[in-house]
Image (cartoon, rainbow, N blue to C red):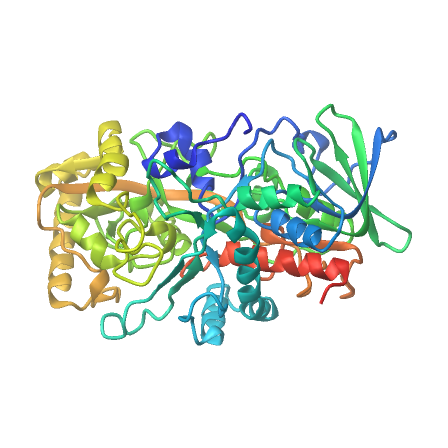
Length: 572
């Protein structure tokens, strides 16, 4: 493990701010993050603008030959490399960090043969996702994912099942009787070893990449850690024929690629220059940043080779950055991770006013709070929170209670002792109460005082609570239209409140490619020999991450990486 590695078990045990930055990346929804140290990295800012192409090194200390070179050992890179190695290719993976990525295990896929229950209307899902992007998403990319993700997850199970991995399916969607408009379900697979137990003594989730690494290396694939790729090598016709990298000893290495180079380095969330240039203000109101080695290396190399960056500027931002009284926005990021922040409890602004339908996907909820005075919101609930959380029945990485039936989280099938009120209290609530980030009081007046409200704001806050309780009692949110089953009264002491701001995971808009993952030049022609996948690849999220669909990012990353490897090797 690299020096910055964090225990997976400690992630769901709830960490303090020191561990939270690395822990947030362990979810990928959500998205892969490097576990290793960054000693092999380079200071992009020291070279000038991120757009400037560096000169090739004068001396190459080592030259290697491979059929396929993969840049990045994460959800995309290891899928691509293993696919290629299984088909007899000599594969070299270049990884900037000191270990493979730690990725969330939820992998979104449609219509595989693994389970009988699947989403029957992909076009409806795709059109909804496109609405979250103001109509700017590439529907051919979504269609390709919808059609080929089933094959991908079948392949992953066939590949990893001999390593002891199971593939429980999370399918859960409220019935039309309960929530007639909530037709977008969880539909992901959760590869795990032996059982799904998020906090048990034998923590076995988030393991599929480690097992895939074993398969890759058994097939002769090589991973070179602390070896950041610097630039692509192209012939006179513009075809990509290899990669220049820097080894752990700082010497230059050239890896020639007979069949192609696949780039999947995770976006540019750790590159402040690129964030300010490409996403100005997008992540301004975050108190956490999970990116560490993701400095835009893959995107920069592709652009220097002639690729185009899609319009937009999207970041994947959670609504679960909890603030202490003295927490500031931006670097050095001193907030803490707080999973309950994604529950659809009442939110009020610093004036005590409700301002949204709280039943939003993560980035939309974050954006709504960021647009309020102070650029955060207060999340508020009462002593019946566990009953509320069970009724809310959220999916994916926001789930805090076992689903009622038919999913990987079914307590009757899998050990879900961690998904209990005791776990929630011990690992998420009590440490934040002790730190002062979470306020807990016996009366609403005391809570308002703890929130720093003056008399006028206290009156507004109490009136907001009264109105919200009335709406919850009638079962109809006439103010913002939240579904009745996601409403909850604030009436039973003790009462709780916490400041919630953004937690940046990764950037998500990227290089324009075709459905084979080949970057396109301005004239529309593909750059031969080059493939771009994962958070370096555009088409899916130019503006926002539609996290209504559990595991969609990990699923599309794995799907297009497998497509890229097969296309590079000429495999149907």
